Image (cartoon, rainbow, N blue to C red; front, side, top):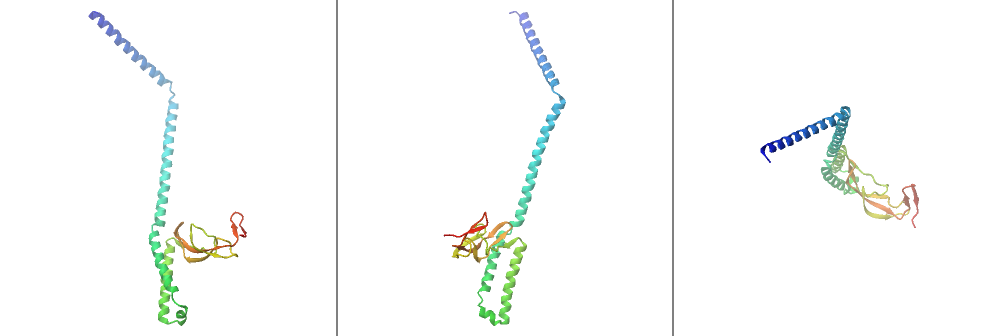
Length: 205
């Protein structure tokens, strides 16, 4: 192939390539021209709206979770301290109950002042705990609930529905909606069973 033929071949190839590129560009321009700009804007708007709604939902969940964590921190941050104070209150109560009735009846001024001081200290301590969300459970006469009570023994009693708390050995307490310390109780057995759904009793055999 001569140099002239080579040059002609190269020129034709370049012209064909240029023509193809021009055709492709023209086709792309025609395709772009076929897209409705309003529809394009609607699609972009819908995409942005979806992203915004997702972000708003995430922020709302974060806000609620943060508020819940702050509330829990305020409510339960003193749980460990309150539990320790209950032990102190228990000891005060044991000290009061250890005083013989005859000694109380004697009514010596100095000794009775000491007893009253211990009782006032116990009441003040329990009052302070209650102001911080600690509440005393009162399970006597209620149906035994393992979430709030700890059964220490059973007492046969055919006249009381089985599973009823008939004696409180140690007071239980809650803080917020959580158990700080379960109540230690004695539970009846042998009596009629309670039908929880109908609220009726059924005698055991």
